[in-house]
Length: 59
Image (cartoon, rainbow, N blue to C red; front, top):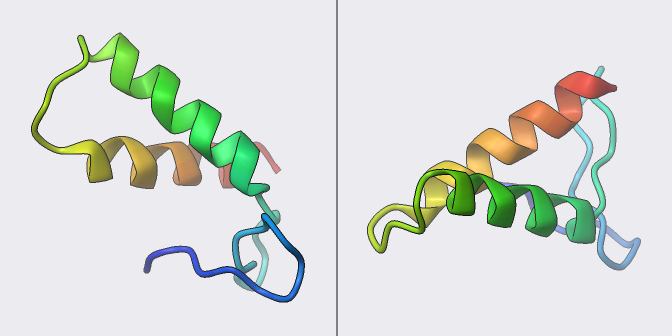
């Protein structure tokens, strides 16, 4: 379920029916989610996965 890079540099692999998300957009969205949660030191993967879902849902 983790994003893997395809041949395009900086792009997460697109799943059928979902928007392709750039690596930079995903990094920024995950970072801002992390800040909104108060910069916890525990589970950064949660921010990454949720940011990816949000960006793909925006289509």
